[in-house]
Image 1 (cartoon, helix red, strand yellow):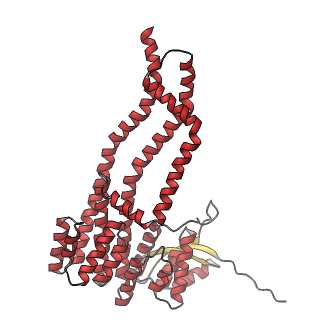
Image 2: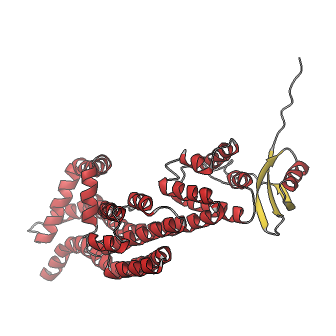
Image 3: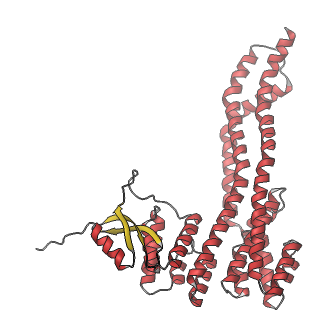
Length: 408
């Protein structure tokens, strides 16, 4: 019986120059160095360096979920390669093989195989709706239809980078105070459960009446020691109920969105972020040539807040009946007069996309400044909070000792 010999392939890291003189790099699997070089030359790339990829100390590629940041990086890589003259299929191969995230690699290579099978890029991307939403697919479709996919991919990459940067700023503003409060809660719990009981034993030998603050802290400690399972179980249960209700109840999410916009300091930050997101998204779709009514529907879906989503849908209804964009924006009472005026000027000059891009740049900068100012403002407030909570517990424990010193 004849036996079939299995050809072993190895991953090679390469650098080269294409016919336009652009420097490219990537990874390719092949049975030998010579065959990989031959394949690169066949694709129009003159290899300047080809060598085996060193093995990872952790045993291969990292597995994990696909994060929005991964999609932003992928968009920029694809835009650069296609604008440099690299064929789409080859670009997918290079990006996919070189990705450290196994899930991302699998998705990119699946898209490549789908496009090779004759499907459009839009249809191939639409098979992964969690990673490529309707906005992304609509922009790619507009680029394919108009024959300007390379320039549209560049706009998409810029859009994804800007939106991810905006999300990171909002998260930074929210995580900092939450982390401090969590640390304060943990430290307070440790003091109440392990430190204060030792002071309680010492005070019991003193006799006499304890100061009111000291007695209050000791009572808290006794209660927590006895009912800690109930206390932490209730806190954990409340968090679980909150998360599940938020996921399952649209009405609850809508009320939460409305309340978040009215929170002091944070509400202003969220409003500015929503306006920046609206302007950036609509500007990108305008520049891609997507019809206004269709663009407004997609923008509403990416608003990120129910209040703004509702306002944008009302705008869409008015625009569909012939109203100017600036007028429909003014009717919602959700956009500052300056933003409305800038859009009005853009409509008159026939440059709504560039004017919206300026609005987005301005509000993204305002969000950046607000986050920096918030961090500066929060530092003394957090120090005061920690001083009151932790310092209060320490003072409460030393009050009886000070009292005894005065008596002596």
